[in-house]
Length: 175
Image (cartoon, rainbow, N blue to C red; front, side):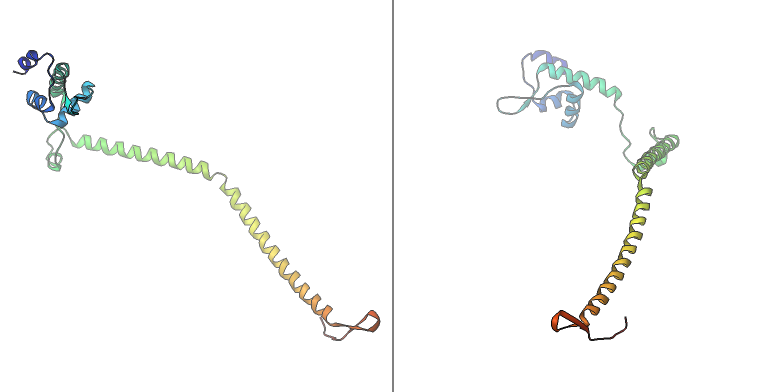
């Protein structure tokens, strides 16, 4: 029936509905087949999607070929637990080993990148310690100079101006 319908209609445009009915598949499967067959979707003047006879033939061939290769996915945890389908304990162990290898390679790469980036940090830390020590020394010197400045101001203020441009010390505080 499929072949006879396709043979009779040389220049006919097929709608997605007609393709679904001819091949017995749904829209998502049509999209998959179009990707596999590299068929570009065409639109008519009304903006509706259509397929040519060649497209329909190609979809039919790809559908027949892919049915032989198509494997149904595992759909529940029970199939893994019961040991049915193609998932076995050995494949789970291989999967876990692969994941561990991936994890260790990522960890090694990150470690090497971080080590490379942090290589010069020891020198920076030592420089920061040196600068901090120097800062504390400078702060101590500033405090000492402020004390000296205050003492000198007090001493200057202890002198009073007397006639003829002379100064006399009025306070006799010990410094």
